[in-house]
Length: 97
Image 1 (cartoon, helix red, strand yellow):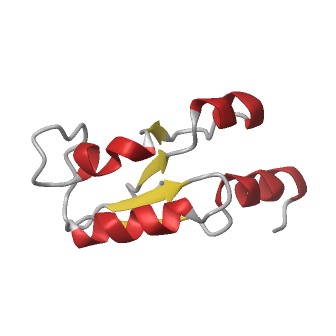
Image 2 (cartoon, rainbow, N blue to C red):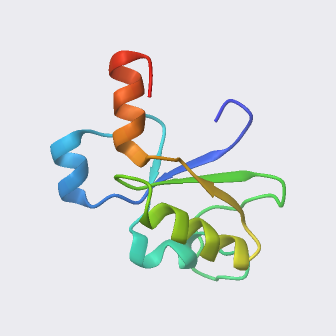
Image 3 (cartoon, rainbow, N blue to C red):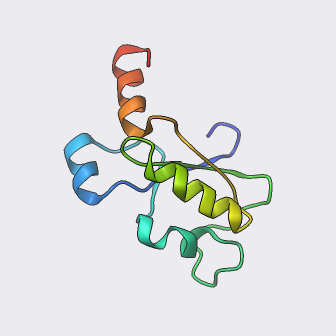
């Protein structure tokens, strides 16, 4: 994020309420992710440069890896957070993964 990456939290409302928010993340529902980020979509909510990295985060890292692959197919420089929010929370709490 310090180098301009867009962090996108695709967890459900219920997961965010239960487990907490991801600081600095844009919240985009997984069902509309492509619409909101694809360069060719008239419904996009972010103007991304071709170099700008998008980091997709789900709860455990499974659906975010599929979402990142779909975004790459659409021309977005996307990846995901291995282990998802759960891994980030563990790292934040203990300082290790």
